[in-house]
Amino acid sequence: MRAGTSDTTGPARQSRSHLWISTLARQFPELVMALAPSTSGPLRERPGSGASGGGRGTAPVRLYVSDAVRDITDGVTELEEAVRERLGLRPVPAAPVPVRLGRIAGLLGRIGADAVLATHVEDETRRMARRCARVLGDPEQMVRLAGRCPACDSVSLRAFPERAEVRCVNPVCRHVLEEGDATP
Image 1 (cartoon, rainbow, N blue to C red):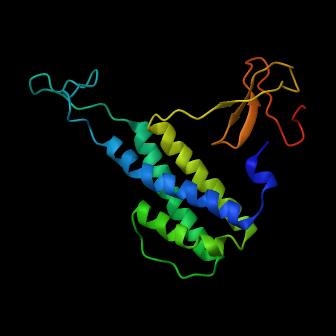
Image 2: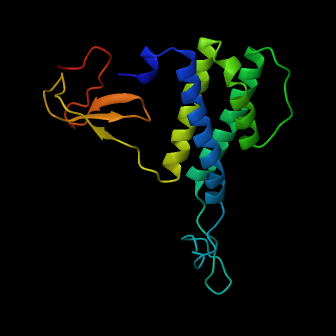
Image 3: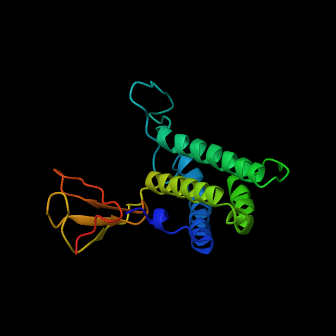
């Protein structure tokens, strides 16, 4: 069951959006720091680089981190522009991601008045926060549920709060529960 599908109340959605924005604002600087080569140990040479200098080469490039930083930066920029356009506000000067997130958070009261925009803001900030967390190595929270899967009858139901999803983790089944699928 998708958490966002049954709850369309403004204050609840606004609260969830604020949570995802706060999480992303807290994690993004860590993600940017993950781009910097580590200075705590010896630098490793990439295979085949032929770097000289006493066997000390460059640290391996972590393209997945760079891609995540770019994706989140672009996503936050586009989200802020879409929010301001939908609300009929003037464009604002470019700013770092945390500043843009703060500006979006400051508009949550107005965003909540537009159900489509509020859903979009919540979905996008959740997506970006989850991507940031995965790149930083945070495991996704999973909660075991009582009851049986309606598709395969196994006791493998798990809730994934970050995805707002309940699914069977039986490798043969992998059924995703929709509203009304819950068994007594």
